[in-house]
Structures are given as C-alpha cells and as structure tokens.
Image (tube, rainbow, N blue to C red):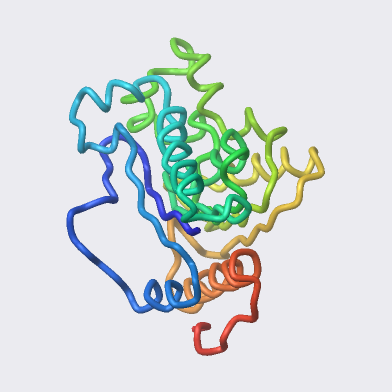
Length: 229
C-alpha cells in the first residue's frame, strides 16, 4: 500500500472527486493499493480540529493515519509488511515521523524536502502552531523526528535540494547523522542546485528513484523500462 500525504494544519488531500493519473492507474494494475488520507486538523473539521494540533504538530496526524492504516490491514485490504508513506515538505516531515515515531505501523517511506525538527523551520509558520521553543519546549521535543530515531526501522528514502531556502538541508543532514550514529539503514540523495524542488532531468531522476523504490520494496519485481523517464 502506498499512502500519499501532505498533512499539516488546515491542509486537505481528500476531496469528493476522482483524479487518476496514468501512473496511478498503472500501479493499480500492478497490484499497488494507493490511498490518500486526511487527519482531524486537515481543515475539514474547522477550528475544533485545528485545536488538537496546537503546540503538538505530528502527534495527532500520526494517530489518525495509523488508525486508518490499522483498519485497512484489519479489513484485509493491505499487507502489514508493506505499508509505504510518501510526501514532500510537510509530507516529508510526516513520512520521517511515520518511520520513527510511527514505525510500528509504517514500514517504508519516501520523503522529500523534509522538516525533521521544528526548531530549524521558518518561525513565521512554526510559531503560529507551536509557539516558541522557550514556551513549548516539550511540544518541540515530542514533534521532532530526531527524538525518535532509536525507534526507526523499515526503509526510508530521503531526498533534499542542496540550496533549499524553504526547508533548509540541515533538517535532512541532522536526521542522517542520527541514523548513522544508530547504524540504521536508509537511502539519501542530494540534488545539486535544488531548492524546494528541482527542474529538468534532476526531477525526472527523483521520480525514477521513487519508481524503483516502489518496485523493489513493495511490488518485488523488475521495473519495466517504459516506467522510467
């Protein structure tokens, strides 16, 4: 199963409509279940939902995503050994959090441009939801991916643009350092000249990496050359 997320406060992925790409249809034919999920603070539930994540980014999103995955597994629709989550930016944060804090549910992840600790992110955005490290030290600690690297298991693919001026690369570097110190297995690909995304063949290289990851770890078969760009 492949779960695509963005997450974050007041940000929705689920809508009452269909939007299927050629890639999604191909993967469905290959036997990949593709799921989009929203959590209680996604905006669908108004201020009441947003109140949950105030000073506690990550926790409630992961609680809701985990509950949905467990239901899909219990209903016989997903293999508990192949639960992959993917996202970019805040979605990268959620993916990294899922492979650490949520690693009892999520087994694989593909994360791009990821926040790994809210201390490193833009204070204009972060303090709106988290307050400051001085007045919410515990919230910053529990929302940090770096707090839970000892719980990491499964397999994580990390990518980051070297000159990302939105989510600075120090986010991924600090996570990488913690995982190395713990002798954990993961994949990492930096993109030279890449900001919060990167154009041209480097973007195609990134998409090919994700395709290869899906075929190797979830479908367990060779990648058709027609799927590579």
